Image 1: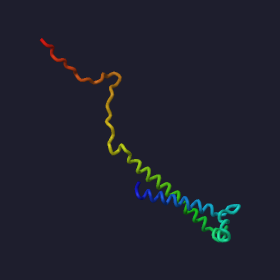
Image 2: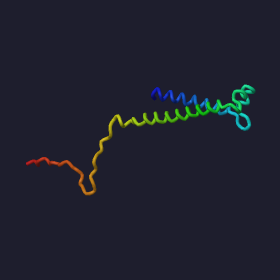
Image 3: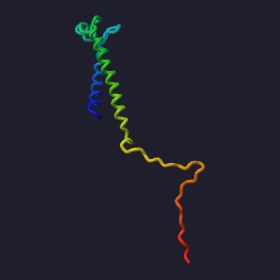
Image 4: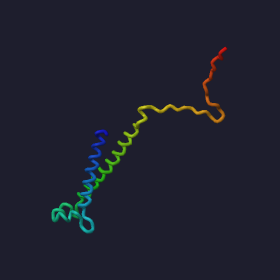
Length: 113
């Protein structure tokens, strides 16, 4: 694996964890995890707050972007394949239906006198 692929995986996992936490912090119809934080949660992630929605959007975009980038990088590394380095195997021709197989002529030794 290349360094950029490893960094993409790390960013992908971090974005996934942050996205889970941010979605749980948002206030839904019956409150949310932000309610568990008490007044601090309401002040930071209140109904009128657009900041948490913007942050969620950017986190989701990073999550999606890294997922696509990981896919592209893995696909490019898979195109290298095992058989590309060794070459293609030799193809032997098989005789057709009307053709006789090629044989080597057999010579008989001269008979003793």
